[in-house]
Length: 296
Image 1 (tube, rainbow, N blue to C red):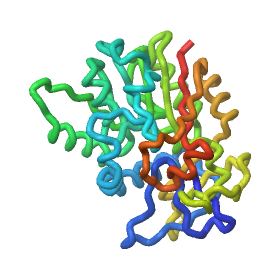
Image 2: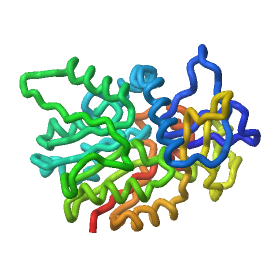
Image 3: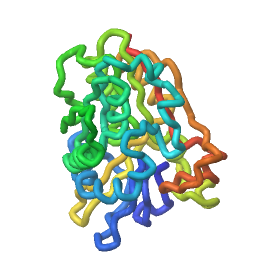
């Protein structure tokens, strides 16, 4: 879902549910270049801290206060059951990585699970607190919130039964195997790890919702990161491309077994456009890939 124009300095709006810069801000330069783990993490933290308000205002109604949505197609965990039957979640310790405003964790808590919502962005977690205050009820059900990097999880070994991430962290990290290894470490034996990302095929197409987004404009096999940088050349947004094969190998290298790879189809009820996601494109090419994995 990343836009790769022929001239990378042209306006581009990458995927991972990212939105364009506000009109009052200087548009950063879009390019393709190497970005290591430190630069990627710093850029992601600052970008989401700056843009969390606009993101939640724009997409909060679609995400809901306590829905578990895997991506712009609107696939709901209540229907998909990728973490297991909803009635079996009660009492389980669950880690959500890249939780944003913790909507998914709130859905898990409402079903009796004990979720921890982790995010790199302090501002995103502030929105989680805001929603919690606005929706507080007598039950007092709410996820624990933790600010931390997905590549260095601040938990003991074997702390969780399940881990999940809906477009969180994975697309933004330079070393996904490090993240997967950390997830494996904090999971108990047999624990499930389910994460969604922009479908890798989208990197070959312009990030446009209309017909212009249906013509291949870049090599699917070019793994060079997409970077937006300021006038000093400092990255302000970074996203990393992996092919489907890369993702599978990363999952295995991280100590997991791949149980399923889900490519949600665009449903008839969903008429919204979200960046380059749209009913037109969604009916022709996949926009999201969900990896269902299990700790050996």
